[in-house]
Image (cartoon, rainbow over the protein chains, first blue to last red):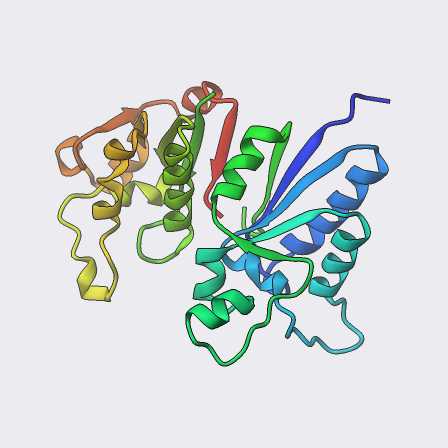
Length: 136
Length: 116
């Protein structure tokens, strides 16, 4: 078996607009199966829509935010939505709801909201950083 | 190890380049070496005299001018794409370095990030 590696996965494509969250989930499952480790999943740009607790797709379609949150919780993987991207797109946790005096919060557990510093740390700590854009 | 951030999207039709610029500045803010490459339609980022207020946006050139301040090592620009867009070297923001061979430029960096 090859040497296990640690990964940071960056998702910038939104669910139902691109295949990025789906491809990234399949890749993440394959990584763990092969004995590798995922340090962190970082949602950036439109990718933050994956962290919405309010997505309600038709019942015969895959529910990417739910599938992702189950995968993350089941494997104890940290997942972070970029705060600047999230606030622009209306993805907020209770702290940001209070700060901006908004009427609701909608961040799906176990996602957290934090800055790009988390992505920089991924660059420093992980053996590999992979991007799932959905466009290129 | 220097990270090369590649912007290949035009400055005002897509937000992807701005997100990539934020990534570049974050690396630099955490003292991680970073360089940028403007490719294809992305070369329009470097055009002088942008009137971004006409489309209700902030000028990307103004944001980009902070690159030197942040310690971004290099601003590379696709020379062939400049020719395609009718941009002479004098039309570009100061501090831009033309790259004649993109494949050669990319091969100099082991960490490359494309704008989404």
